Length: 221
Picture 1 (spheres, rainbow, N blue to C red):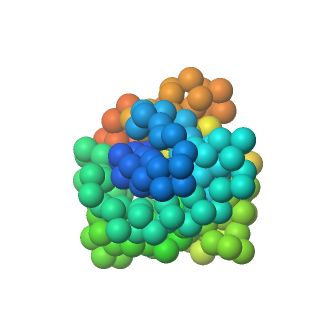
Picture 2: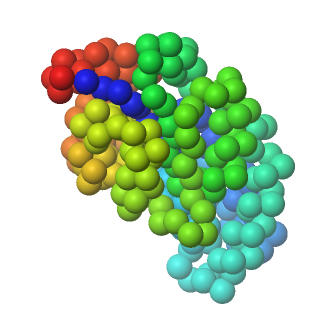
């Protein structure tokens, strides 16, 4: 029986690509580095903002990683909701799951302070039971520690939990803890990546998640 659904944030609940890309590009320009097309950021985002800064700056520019990272955070803090929106249908699906008594949480590699702010901005108060993001003291996905902590907080077993995400990183976490990994094909990463990392199911529309929850509950009663 599925008792909880844990969602990734960027590329799963919200389409934040443009605001993340523009903020990073602005930080690159200020540090004298070339910018990247917005679409290219789809393959840069997902492993935390520190890794994003390193990928965007390039391995040959290690000396400016910290200035780029610091400036990007400042710019993004002011512009995080300029062009960002929830994916079509996701808010209704989340609301339905909540109504059905499913426990809900967010597990993201975004800084926890940003994650909390964006969840509060885009979703109704108390929609999610917990929001777990990156902190100075935590490792980011695919380290399963954050997911294991959420399972304890939600008081559910891995087999009672679905993890929904748009990347192989999310599927690795689900696999590591024994949760049911569902790939969100509408996100930033290609479907092939979700297949490579053994997603238990891949959905093209948020509404399909409701059927997957029902099927998984019957498969794992």
